[in-house]
Length: 180
Image (cartoon, rainbow, N blue to C red; front, side, top):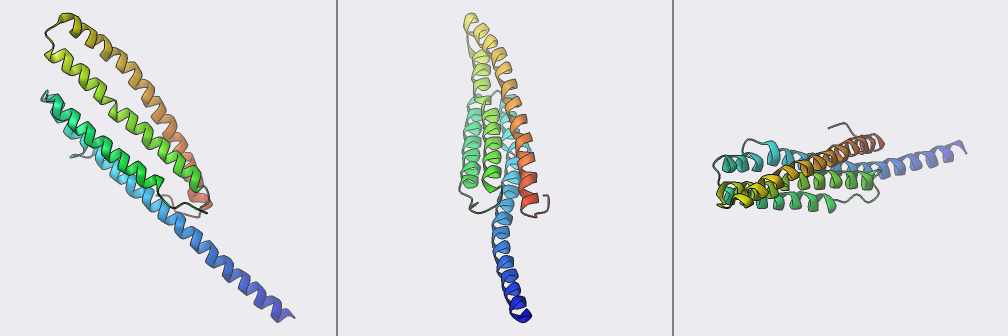
C-alpha cells in the first residue's frame, strides 16, 4: 500500500517537474529575447556607431536629408524589434502576456520619442534655409512648441519604463529566473 502511494507520488512529482521545466524553458526563451532586444535597442540608440550618433553627426553638418534618412532607418529597426517581441511565444508563461505588453508599451514610447526628431529636423531645415522671415519665425515658434511636446513624450517613456521594470521583476520571480 505504501509502495503504491510512493510510486504514485513519484510519478506525480516527475510529471510536475517535466511540466514545470517546459514552462520555465519558454520563460527563459522569452527572457533571452528581451535581453537581446534590449542590447539591440541600446546599441541602436546610444552606441558609438548607433543611429542617434550618426544622426547627430549629420545634424552638426547641417545635412538634414541624411539625418531624416537615418531617422527612417531607425524607425525600421524599432518596427523590427517590436514585431519580434510581438511574435514571441509566451503561451502558458506566468506573467508572460503582462511582460510582453509592458515591454511593447515601453519600446513604442521610445520609438515615439526618438522618431519625434523628424519634426525637429524639419523645423531646423526651415530655420536654416528659408529666405522668408515670417517662415523662419514660425519655424522657431514651432520648434519651441515641439520642446513641450517632447517633454510629454519623455514622461510617457519614464512611466512605461517604470511599469516595464516592475512587471519584468514579477515575471522573473514568478518563473524563478535570475535578474538580467
